[in-house]
Length: 305
Ligand SMILES: [Zn+2]
Image (cartoon, rainbow, N blue to C red; front, side, top):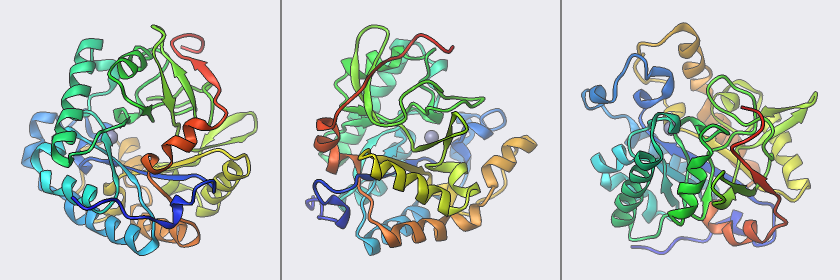
């Protein structure tokens, strides 16, 4: 195993710009879940490897690294892909096994899913897995027990809580930047929320996914700039399928289709432009600094339900 390479964005003490990818296939998204069951996934042609190769080339050319939250289903079927990502200096973290939203699992099922995915990824890469991101940002006040399970399992950080109001996920009263998340059972771990902007009294998503595809790049740049000026980490997230405009159409409702396909053709060039001006890193490379920063404590599992 090659040792992780140094990248420009690793500059200790400098701005902490974090880049993350949720490593899953285009047919595993929640928007398609009503029409495409997990039992059907194996029937689809896999499109991840080509998209991942383009991402790895782009990161390499820009001297950036990233955290890849890997779905266990993908790691089981394409172990060489995970080893390739890890071998080029990026962080491998967990996205669970089967992409079920946390609220559909019992605490024990969630624990099993978590441990299975971590064991699989650690066996594949020979490195410890420190981070977790829930499918569809599905840790909310209602599912805050998941924080207790994560803390008990020894995860160093979580990145599953979106501090916005949304129909599928979100905790609008949660802190916008890195903080210590406490579950209803008292379990505590570092939480790294996706980047938001504060405007008109509400938190607006600015840090990835459909918002990154929809909004002008200037908005994302401005949100990153604000976080950097505050001395806080900025967390950007994307999916490889968002850089794959030629992916086949999926059966979806009109709204879900709009959300899923919006701006697909422009995502790669936007990401390229973003990486041209400044370097990004994985969480692992800056974890010690993030933890050392002044850290607010926030208790989940109460309030706005
Ligand atoms: Zn996902």
